[in-house]
Length: 259
Length: 278
Ligand SMILES: Nc1ncnc2c1ncn2[C@@H]1O[C@H](COP(=O)(O)OP(=O)(O)OP(=O)(O)O)[C@@H](O)[C@H]1O
Ligand SMILES: [Mg+2]
Image (cartoon, rainbow over all chains, first blue to last red):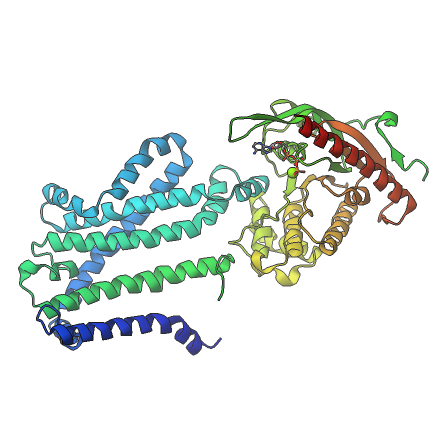
């Protein structure tokens, strides 16, 4: 298949969906004719204004730096915890319920505590993003390892893998697709938690979430533009990075049904 | 050729130092519902160094269980499993296992699978590639070295697994119905290959295969052990001295096949009757 055709087949359907959504939005905006729902073109010019005066790129960069930091911390600590829980039955029974509790706690609930502990600071925002995402990473890693088919473990052991080499060479690689799913999920949670944190912990720590803050008195089109940027970044990373990585891993293992 | 078959009653003197030995081996398994099942019941037999032995027995008689004990994956409930006279406490590089499924690792290429086996047994990195490629050539897969396991046919996968198992040069090859899931042609090819490796290995390796296929056992083995229905005990033993490669049309081989088959069918019928009576 040629690269152009591949792109067309790959990107065609999602693009059609986006175009359809914008069309519906344009119609709704035209019909309601209200300041609360600006038309796509008005939002587009607000977006261009935001780019021109530097406020949008500025906010996006601040946000992405926070995100990268929180995500890396969450993934490293979550994977390590998941691995530790898989290795040790006592730790698993003692700690897994706590991680599950963290996982089902709405991340927004952490914002007030974070502000009390860290003040209305950058650290509070990053804390919320980490707490919001590392439990799902830990649980996904644990789950992925525990679902490795026993046959692989037995084959690995009879081939001479023991203890750590068994984990490094057999169990962890076998669990990789599940860990990838956890990564993708943790990304979603980190992104959402970070937005909530930035929105609530306003105090001069500009970020994309901060642009949504009604207290800033931003115009509605600007708000829409910021929202659009947030959505686009979130989807792009999810689809282009994790989605493609996941597909590549699955294809290599014959887990992907080609259509 | 008259003495091509020996049975338990006329067993010749046992070899001095068996490679593998089971002494009153009892393997109990606990099912998820809490029931305790006796998989093998005081099973005793030897396998001599360089011998090719096939295990036959009704389904559920404990073949997999006893192979798992010899592989070091399952501990005996009582009795002993010995390798070179020493109790087996875990898996080791001296034994390789062929499972019913090839159990190739899907994240590695075919070559990568063979190389990993070598790596895990401590073969230095510089030597792995050559050995792995040679073994893939041995099983006629050199063209598929860079393929992923899922891109191979079932027969090719099992050949790759055979290459992975033998590449690390084990003393003993344990097979748990390794060709059970293959079609007749792939099965025949693998049987031939296995025979070739067994005959070709200098100082002859020791092979112990469980199978459901009486013809396969008779074609391959020096000795066929027939197990009773569960819990498995040793029922009868057939020594086959016919030269290799063997031909199923050979009168003698045909006779052994039918004799073993009759015995096995009796045992299967008996076990079904016992099940019904419960
Ligand atoms: N992991 C296990 N947990 C519980 N019971 C088991 C387990 N493995 C085997 N068993 C039981 O042990 C008995 C012997 O099983 P085994 O798999 O050794 O028989 P087999 O001779 O290999 O049978 P087949 O020819 O069908 O493969 C059976 O009754 C089975 O239910
Ligand atoms: Mg079995």
